[in-house]
Length: 256
Ligand code: GLP
Picture 1 (spheres, rainbow, N blue to C red):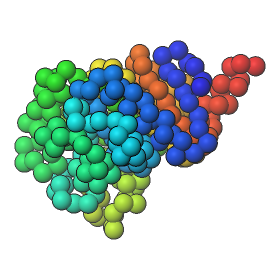
Picture 2 (picture 1 turned 30 degrees about the vertical axis):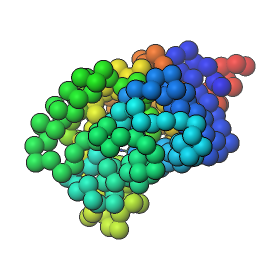
Picture 3 (picture 1 turned 45 degrees about the vertical axis):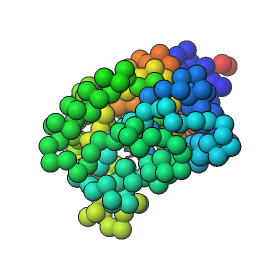
Picture 4 (picture 1 turned 180 degrees about the vertical axis):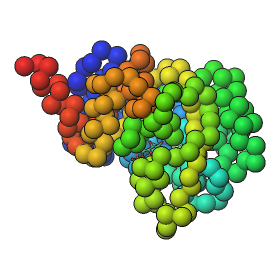
């Protein structure tokens, strides 16, 4: 582990190993508090973790029946039945395979006609439930967390966001054509993320190395949204060697 004060960085040989570690950390939290509020993420990064959580559930090593599951973001507009919606993704990759109560699964509604109300209601829901205990994050190559895209200011609350071109390009790999990629998203804001008790950020692949380096070793700026995590008191970053490339160089230089 590379220890940078409030930020612990673990470097693994493979994405599978990251998944095992991340699943272990969440299951420990759930064992300590059966009623934990967990905020899940989508994208490729947490998929290994979710596979491992299903395995642990099948081995009866973890019980999800008491948790409340929130999600960071959703495309807008999108039908829940669309196989690319994050609602579908969560059911397909995790929720349908474990015993999370269906009534305790909360994802911003990409079908809503009233986005403003949806955003306000989502923040209220998180707040009324006492905030997030365990926050899972990926990171975009542009440093976004959730769909908090690089911008002139940090947005505190859940909001509608126009997706950055780099995000649309990166996410187009999941769609049949560029036209089908939604251009907007609803994302939890920086406030709920920063108020969560514990944050786990997962990244693998060399294409994430620069974002990881800038997020944790350069200035805190809304142009690199993940950099705000430098101000959080309990962040664990799980990387493979590719994503850790520039960080490891920095660590070696520091300890010379
Ligand atoms: C997506 C999601 C983010 C995710 C990120 C990285 O657009 N909205 O929540 O963390 O981009 O995705 P991946 O893990 O596939 O690289």
